[in-house]
Image (cartoon, rainbow, N blue to C red; front, side, top):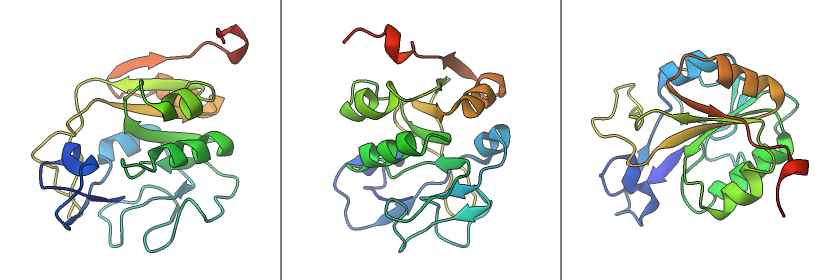
Length: 178
């Protein structure tokens, strides 16, 4: 998940960068609490200090364009303009967990998360992502984060996992107001 940054920590990555390429890794304790994944379609470049899945798609390959197969997907997408495309792909895949900012007012939350998720864990506090060397960032993400489950088995994992936060199950689509 390479992202442009102005050196402000992960929260600055959504602004136009100064040309520097920053890579922010998912905290390993999050991954360990969620169990094994079959695919990470937007993995950090090799070498990475810990695996995020059995199979990794990393740049220069395009994880949005390549086939994902049938397995459980972990997706910590680049948090820029294409986040909605990643959430659309997760929704259509239907089996896995995404780690994203908890910006519930955004269009992609209304189009690709609320209608399709099986459960959401709103994380307590703000995450500190990790640098490619495996060192924890000294700055937090700059925004609250959420783990979004697609599929009942992933929702069950989120509900039972030891990660601090609030687990929410959205109303079934049939009970929602138009």
